[in-house]
Length: 138
Length: 377
Image (tube, each protein chain N blue to C red):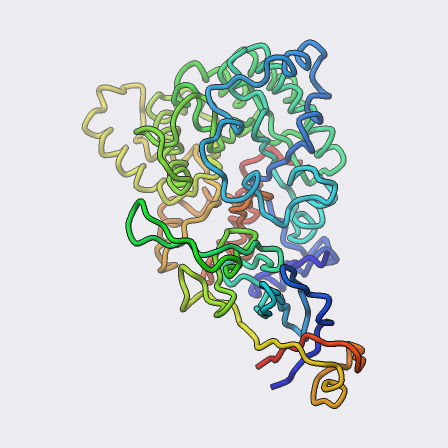
C-alpha cells in the first residue's frame, strides 16, 4: 500500500480542494468541513474533471411534494453532465454499482513522522515542522 | 490548465494524440453544433446600426419567449459546462483562446459549425429589428470567430418569421465561403413546413446550403405539445418532440417535393425518435394518400433522402446494441457528430459513443457524413 505525500495540510483548508497527480492517476483531494476525501478525478460517465465540479447536498423525497435535504457538501457533481457522486464512497447516486469513483484513504501526518518513511516523498520536499496530506493508493 | 486530449484506443493509430499530432494523420472531426457567445450583448450591439442599437437599449428584445424568460434554471449557469468559463469573466463560448485550447485543439476538430443562440434576431416580433439583429449576429460571428479561426464555420442566422428579410440575409452571405449552413430553430411560429418559410428553403437550396434546425425557438409554443411542464427534465424530453413536429411538417407539406435538393439537419434533439416517426408517417400516408396527393414518395423516403440528425444529446440505453440498431434503422450516413460545446450536456467525440461501435461507423459519424452535408472548403 504505497503512501504518497501530495500537499502541505495548509494548502487544502476547509472548503477547498486540490487536484494531484500520482503516477498515472489524477486524484482530487477535497476538504469538506475539516474532513478530507480523495477520489479519482475522471468521471466514469464521460470523462469530465471532477476537481471542477460543485459540492452539493443530497435531496431525496418519499413522495411527490415532499423533500428532504441532507448532508450538505457531501455530493460532488461532475461539471459536465451533473452526475452525482458521494464523497464518502465514490459511488454515483443513479448507478452506484457501475459508475463509481475510486476512493482513497487520505490523512494528515506530521512531517516528523514522514521523514522516517515508508512514504513516497521523492517529488515533495518534507520538513519536520509542517503537516502533510498523505494519500494511500491500492 | 492541463487539458486532456482523449482518444478512443481503437482510433489512436489513425487519430494521433492531442494537438501535436501530425496534421496529416489525425482524424478530422466535423462538429455540427458549437455555440459561440458574446462576452456580453455589447459585442453584438457593436454591429447594429445606431438606430437599432438605441432601439435595443430602449425597448429590448421582444419575442414570445426567450432565454430571458425561461421558466427553469438550466442545470448549470447559462446551461454551460462549469469548466468552460473564461478567466476574463465573459460567457462560455466567447473566448477564442479557450475554445481552441479546451475544444478545437484538444480533440482535433477540423471544422466546428457554429449555431448562435439567445438574442440573435431569430424570432423578434418587430420584423425590421429581427432582420437587423440577425445581420449583426452574422457579422459578429464572422469577425469574432470565423475570420480569426477558420476551423469555425459560420451559420447564416435568419429572421425566420420574416421570410423576405431572411432571404435577403441568405443572399448577402451566400457567396462568403465562411458560412456553412442556414440556421433556424425548431419552435417557430408555425410548423417549419408551412409555406411562409418556403422562400428560405428556396434560397438555401439555390446556394447549396443545408438548413440546420436547432431545438428551442421563440415562436411562442410551450416545450410540449400539451403546454408548459414543471421540470427542466421534461423540457429536455420535449426537444425531440419539437424535432418530430418539424420533420413531419417538412415532409407532409411537400417541402422536399418542391425543393428536391434541400438538405435539413435536425440539431440537438437526439435521434432515436426518427426511425419510428418514419414508420408511423408511412402507415398514415398509405391510408390517407389522397389528402396529400402532392407527395410522390413515402414519407420515409423523403426523410431518408433529405434529413440528417446530429447525435447529441445521445440516447444512452442500458444495452448498447439497442442504440446501434437505432442507428442502423435511421441510416449510418444520416448521423452527424455534434458536441454542443460549451453547454453542459456536451458530448465528447470519443467517449459519447459506446464501445462496440464499429470503427468505420464511428469515423463516418465523426467526419465523413458532415463533409457530405455542410458547405465546407
